[in-house]
Image 1 (cartoon, helix red, strand yellow):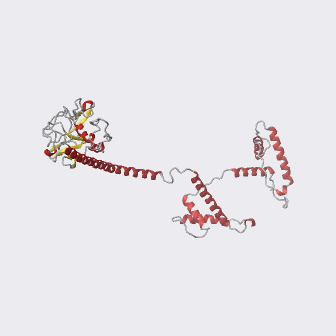
Image 2: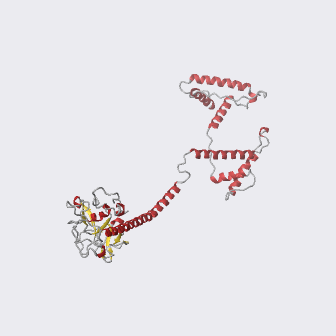
Image 3: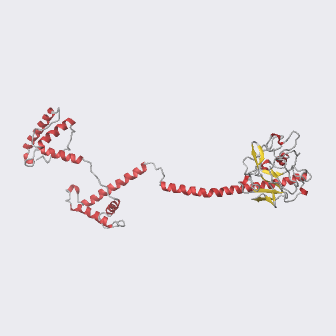
Length: 421
């Protein structure tokens, strides 16, 4: 018997080299088969003999200490058993996780400390079974005084609670360690919000576009109203006549080099309207429609007598190339004198030409073909979805069925509107 007064020393294990371990395994395998002879690793004869010598010494110690060992048991058998136990202990423990319901039931038993208490809904039977399994631990023999009087079931519950808490901490650490790419929002929520946003935009855009067009129409109407007042002022300053310069042979050469010929005659009808800008009756911005993104709003340069291009023009003016100037006092108050640009004339190869494919009752293109603002001689501005005012199509000469080359003019320009170009 070892002396009980000598304190136990912790066992120190020295790991064998691979060659010594192979020799030991070979010797123990042979002894387990009841023989000292057996297959040995190649080149390990010397190591095998050393191992046999060490084991023989252990057998002698065992024989001297026979009262302490079981009958017929040799030290080698004890060594084999210890090695087998050590290898078994080194095997990884296979842990089977609890299902979610069993885990909740175990949490309830732990929280209640083995006593009756609240349990999760629908888990009464599971909770009872878990409590029953844990109660089996109470039937185990109590440990020595080193363990005190603490009940085994209580220590087991505490250990289980500690393990569950460690698991929760590990999950929380993992959650905070990983970058949260969705900021706590699931992809489904992101896609749903995006779909709602797109739907809202699709519903809102038409309303915004309609509002924008309405604002442009209103701004255009206001500009025409201001232009009407200044046309009236010009008429008062010029013996009741509408703005008109020297008349040439054509009125369709807007934007071309010979829009004003060498004799100073106007070959462009828009040049007559430009007199209001040239003589400072109106600012260029008042003759620019908000729907025309190419309209000219800057002040004219020295000697400029017309718009530089057909695209820069926003409004079509009453044709001034008749035999005599148009007098306000001889004209119908309902005579249309200015309106959003005539859609029957387009630019082709750098020249303004009549569009034979356009419908004669088409609306101005400045407002998306929905209609046009029209200024009457009496100063009123009205919105119309058609070019007809009192039966008169303001885009054409009454009774004229053919095209236009730029030399045509109404026979009675005081009552027949023909807004060009």
